[in-house]
Figure (cartoon, rainbow, N blue to C red):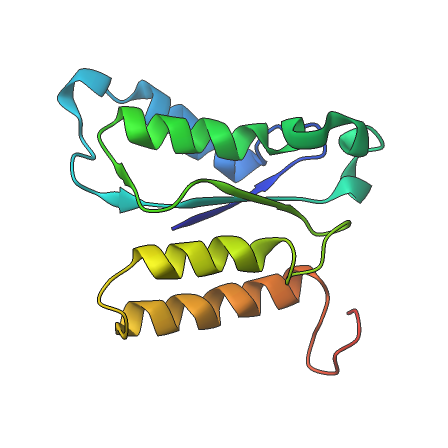
Length: 138
């Protein structure tokens, strides 16, 4: 599961750029990820760049590029790529539909992975949204 923060202009962050470069350098004909399951969620913050709001879906370009590249390398998409702008959407309308779809795609229904994924993603989204221990930003 990849949760990829996208810069305001849709570009990958520095560490994600390194990941994308490494994946692009891989030999696609060898299908090095054959049979490996994956899912990608792009997270953007409109406040990071004044143009992000005008980019619309383009602000998630890096996440979509990663999703496509993993498939080219033989990976098996477990859920369609998701996207949420944490400055515009709350977790329930942005990331949770993607999380639910991913959980539905995973089996068996009561697997420990599903429970772990839910806890990890909720904690990360709360941190991104600034919903710390006191429930207030910071």
